[in-house]
Image 1 (cartoon, one colour):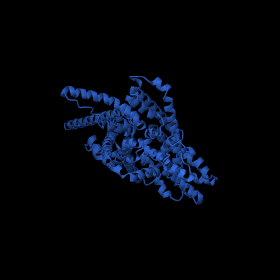
Image 2: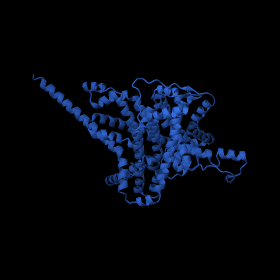
Image 3: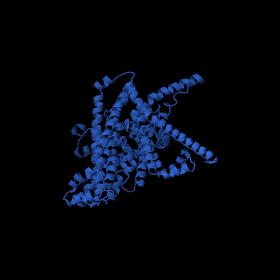
Image 4: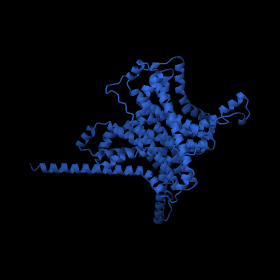
Length: 570
């Protein structure tokens, strides 16, 4: 060995040490982000186990059975109806050709742009005693008042199931449509040759093949139903989510609210385990060769008209009706666009959503990259666990965020006052910081899922080549990964921003006094039956949602659109 080899070996050893230390630093940052995301859920569990005033026996003997039964009925009803609407329309769109199919295959997506609580306001206004339906009935039949005829109660759990299903069925539609598209057309041809009719083809071939996707989409719809607050509060349905608001805000018992929140978490975990078990028991594999596409059958006459009507009904309930009612009020009361507070609500929505989006996707990028650099087991185990925030309702996260942050706020304020002599007030809970944190935890799964999927599509040889040329891990992320993942990161940012704009429960609980976003403004005005002033904010929220749906449709010109939203399944 020559003397000149010794310095080279030393330099290589120093370089390996620096790279190993750099990887450990990224791993520590990933662990820190994971702990930050999981902190609200852990805080909820801690407060439930260590309440200052234990009202669990009172909850069990009084309101909790009603809250739980209503939540279960609502979730099962919404999941079942969403499965029927989503799977039925996906089957018709995938297997048959009929008038309007070209447009309906995309129109069936747009109810995703309408928050369910806006659909509730529109349906109640449309069907109420003073609405156009009952007014027309009284005019046609000569009835003078409500005692002359019977009409279904509008604000009921059945109406809540209808509204939530009309808003959430696209999850089932997206996943089922993709599953049907991926199957070979040979299975359907063989079934037809054996004499299977339309119903037999669906029951014996299509339904079994699409069952995992239907279960996954229904599970998402049920989780969203458990997390809903706007629809159930407006229709007067007492669920676990409304119980958190009642126990915390009216009874001033944070421990009791945390205990109800733990029940919600348990329901969500049961739904997630059921979904995974159902999919694990129903695995259907296709040939490794390119499957033959399904040949759509042309429908004619009554069958074609029926298919068009059946695919139009969900679009009408989930999009046309809400937009029509809200647009009517927006045009009838143009002064609502210049009422005080609307501009400030727009600014709060954009600023909070923008900051939360940057932090969410940025932290997700750093965390996933750190976990990939780490060879340790703990970061890899925590990576999927951080997606629990999306399954946890906003009200649950608000309970786990506000109490610890408020305690920290008071200690910081006391410390600053003791050092400077002036009281700075509540820095975190007195501003939008708590809302931003809730948004980040709530929608971290979207950013993480998109970033993780983008990393897997990049060849490992590219970062290895960059490191061999002397680039450190930060430079590899900046110069190699980020440019190649720009499209996926941009889509994730838009999805997170849209969900932040629509989030209602967490914003209601965490916002400072007289602090409005578009979602809270719509809720407050509609709760006061002031749809004229609620309409502008509602239209703005729906426009933001339409941007996301447009992006998903444009980014997925084939039938793989479900892949962009499949991150929600976790």
